[in-house]
Image 1 (cartoon, rainbow, N blue to C red):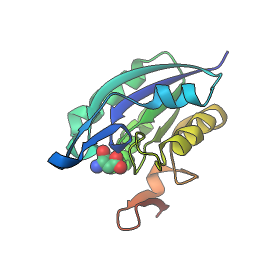
Image 2: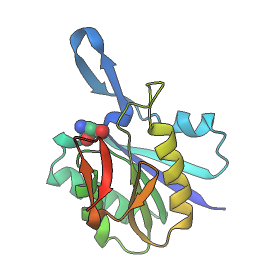
Image 3: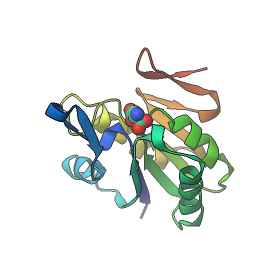
Length: 161
Ligand code: ASP
């Protein structure tokens, strides 16, 4: 049976906001709840590598993500990641052979009612089962090649460049 390994590394998708203090924490990964609520029947396993805003990630974080995925025995990989440097991490992973790796995240925390998280996770779970080996980003209802993608910060969306 098909099995998907899901790595979580943080980002807005997992943020919890504290309005009075005007601050946030990257909380526990929400993806398990999202997949359970959607009654997903594909087998999956999750592993949290870190809980960081991706703007706080550095080269050593990306190296750790690279190594974790390289040594993982599964070939279908989904990563939930902050959107600001998702393209950078995706490019780092391009050297990994024989796996389909799909990165996704959300502009609004999964804990928010109007979040794009559920939709983006759904796209990633479908994409990882159908795409050939390689690294992809699923955001805004599209599948992007990281080598030709950027986040348009003003429009709050991913675009081909
Ligand atoms: N600053 C956040 C991050 O990249 C933005 C997001 O996830 O949408 O982690």
